[in-house]
Amino acid sequence: MLRLIAWVGTVCMAFAPFIIDYSEGKLIAIAGLWFLTVQAYHAKMVNLIILNLIGIIGYTYALYI
Image (tube, rainbow, N blue to C red):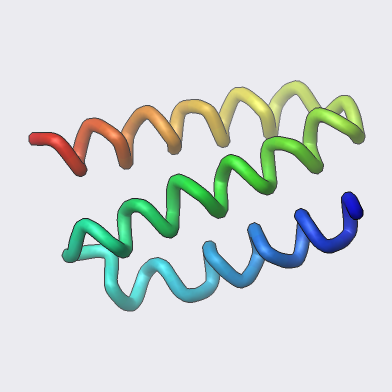
């Protein structure tokens, strides 16, 4: 299951930059980072967890501002 979550996150992050100017692109990026955060948490990669959370906050800010 973790492998599927990681691949979904990877696909989301690969697709999101092409539509990042739209709300859907930001939502896909947020979802992708969330899925990749699950993988990083399982692997105990604190630095990636922090970077992913900062990215989620940034895209959420950009979505509503």
